[in-house]
Each structure stands twice: as C-alpha cells, then as structure tokens.
Image 1 (cartoon, rainbow, N blue to C red):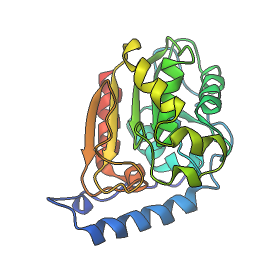
Image 2 (cartoon, one colour):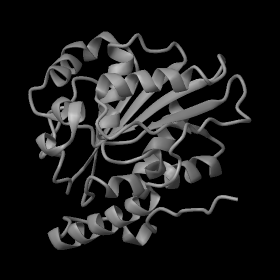
Image 3 (cartoon, rainbow, N blue to C red):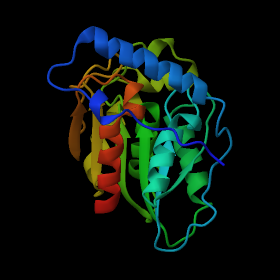
Image 4 (cartoon, rainbow, N blue to C red):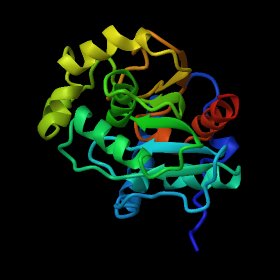
Length: 238
C-alpha cells in the first residue's frame, strides 16, 4: 500500500510579498523531499484500471529527477478519482528524446481515454514539443507546464548532454517551440514560481494562460497546494 504524501498545509501557503529567506528555506525543504523521492517510479507507471472515457494525467518530470518527484501529486489525483501515468528518462536526455518517451507511454493507454500532459521544467518543454513538433496524439485534450524554461534556464550549461543544450537561452528547441506554439489549438496553462531562481516568473509562452505562485521556488512548485489545485481544476475543465 502506498503512503499518502501530503502537500503543504494551507496555513503554509504564501501570503503577501514572500520573504526571501523564507522562500529559500522552503526551496531547501522541497529539494530534500525531492531527493527522498528519486528512487521511486523508475519504470513506467501505467494505470491498470483505466477505461474508455477516463481522464489520465501523464506526468513528465524535470532534469536530474525521476518520475518519483510526482508521487505527492499522483496521490492527490488518485484521491480525486483521476488516473495518472509516468516514466523516467535518463539524466542527459533532451527534449526530442523525452517526447519520444511520451509517445511510447501513451501507446500503452486505451484508445478512448482523455489525456492531459503535465510537465515540470525540462519535462514541460518536452510536453509542448510532443504536441507541436512530434505529431501529438488525438487523445490529448490539454497541456500544463510547471516552471518550464521557455526562455531558457539559469545554469542550463551545467547540465549534462542534450538536456543542458536544449534549456540554454536561444537554443533551437526553444526558438522552434515559440515559432510553432500557435499551430496547435489545445488549452494550455503555464505555472511559474515567484521565487524560482532557475526559471524566471517573467517567462512567457505565446499561448495559454499563466499562473504565478508567490514565494515558490523551482522544486517547491512540485509540492505546493496551489499548483495541485490548479492542475485539478484544469483537468476538470478539459
């Protein structure tokens, strides 16, 4: 039996202008929590009881993480009756390779399901690449990105392989995502953290809605109640 992993309690949410030290401490706690989740869900996670007409959230993790990062959100989705699926890709994988992984995972889901793609950081870029450049899938009814570096990520050059190159400001992947964004007519939500030091909250994407979570850093967004609430609200709307 899986252990329920709660999100932040409501009283811990940001109120007013966030204090820098408080935000930094919150991000440090999120990083420690993420580290504890990395050994989980290294293989594909596919819901066994999903049926035609069901909603499935396909969760794509960020660079240097694993699908275990999504465990708390998966628990929350399950409590709300929503199925989820995920997979783990290698640390150096770039956007194109991760999009291929999305395609392979979706091939394991029934034809009649409704899919919402949710990606964190590098995973968010891959989600949009899949629907814009890799042919997509008619079952996909919407996309959500969390801290996706559409304008580039600070420190991207320090990341291994194609992952770092794709997230660098001005990369061909980022330029193509901006150019072809309007060619796909799908509901989209971009979520950013007001205290994210890797991906600026000022980052924009040509389509969809934007949500900024005050006081949340890059990893804290994974465990923030407001992020989970927003994802659930989108899943119910699509």
